[in-house]
Amino acid sequence: MPSASADMELLKGLNAKTYKAQAVWFLNAYWKTGPAFEDNADQAEKIWTFC
Image (cartoon, rainbow, N blue to C red):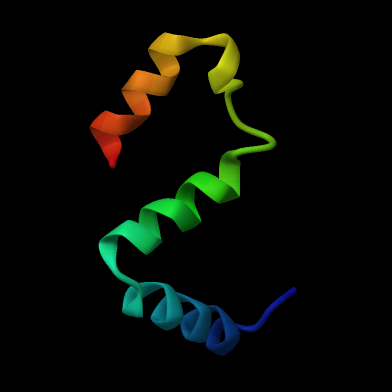
């Protein structure tokens, strides 16, 4: 399990990214395990309301 200081460093790195890069990071985190956007157009459109 990563330490709290390691988590903080990762968070700082994420915070230093542009808004667009943060959105890409978020989408990449859930792309394989999250909703299948190609099968559900409504979910694909909904994601844009968050980004």
